[in-house]
Image (tube, rainbow, N blue to C red; front, side, top):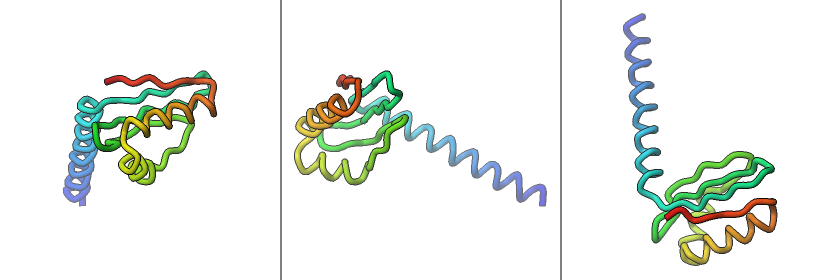
Length: 99
């Protein structure tokens, strides 16, 4: 029984490490739209020329699949401009592009 728990624990640790590595690589190789405000509703959208590759958010919800589809349909530059305008209109913060 102890051996089985050790094997399961090892598998879980390997999966966690892989997820961290994938997130780190995505984060380091993507451009970012960083949106911050004093209210604590911060979001960073990671993207490349064609699509959204990921995001991190605090105090705000974000539909990655829906927004990814929308961004691909209107183009990344238009999406980033529109999201920045939306964010600054609905919070006291602003967005900057980190390319």
